[in-house]
Length: 388
Ligand SMILES: NC(=O)c1ccc[n+]([C@@H]2O[C@H](COP(=O)([O-])OP(=O)(O)OC[C@H]3O[C@@H](n4cnc5c(N)ncnc54)[C@H](OP(=O)(O)O)[C@@H]3O)[C@@H](O)[C@H]2O)c1
Image (cartoon, rainbow, N blue to C red; front, side, top):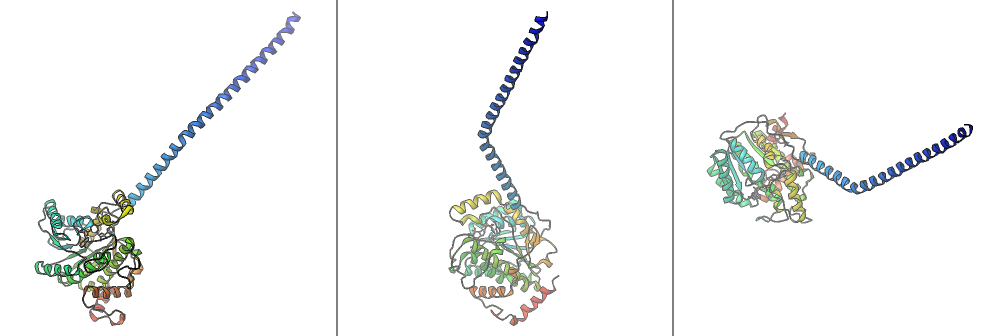
């Protein structure tokens, strides 16, 4: 009994030892299994990581593009529901983009709409289409090339012969593209976007004064803020750059808009500059090279439709209570702050004189001395001061 009592603890110790060993083995196996699993997991992560990163980068890029697109396409619908029955509106460059969209909307608002384009056949087809879409039979097509001063003069002579009135003039036509000269030998961007409209407005001013209150709307762009004019290099011979030429023309338009206000506010002709925002139109059609192709794709994806860009142009043509905002810049149907540099009266005066000279008529203000402003212009400047 005593012997067997000694054997039992020994065996028990042995069993315990084996059990312990087995347990340790089990643990080790588990650890090894775990290590193996971790290795496998690491391999999987290594395989999947680039795909994961790619997905994250693409999703972030899509989100950023989407947000920029939302920002670019942000537009406020025209709050004015006014109809302008029978009022005559003349829109330059209405064969596509913003001009065409503006013409369609104003035809819906019962205006008498006169649209212009360089090719009579093209502009007539657009007019026919607008008449059909809106049922407004008072939509007519006129030929006008703003890059040809003689054509502008003849256009106005014919206009004055055939049209009794003009209540709204929308200076909209635009060119953006490589360096080229107009028939008059002038740099095309400056000539079409600014000078042609300057001359057209000048020749039509009397008619608008007779029909006052009348409105002049200059379609500009936020590029104006980057523009400036070197009067010694109007041909941009020192170096042509598409954006620079475009910015200069838009700068001139905003300066001109303010000058129209100074001169014509007293006669109840109000001037508004409108920045329609970036719109998907044909404006980039002449932009050359790879940059042009990229910009056109961006325009298609990111920019707002011309109908949205036209909302502010239509707003300035039809809304009530805009008298006190004459001379100002509008975007998204609201007045926006104007860059101080366009308020420089010396630049405005010089631009006016040089433009008059280029168009072949005598300026009513001297080029240099501000004090020598003619009585008429001085009176109109007073009217501006009275404006609240
Ligand atoms: N699109 C934008 O993102 C944007 C942004 C800010 C401001 N804007 C301004 O909006 C205005 C309209 O441009 P859009 O974007 O609607 O461009 P668009 O679709 O290219 O329209 C331009 C219009 O101008 C006319 N035009 C061009 N050269 C002319 C000339 N020598 N004489 C008479 N008409 C001429 C064209 O008519 P034809 O070629 O048929 O003659 C066309 O109807 C421009 O002043 C532009 O600077 C546009």
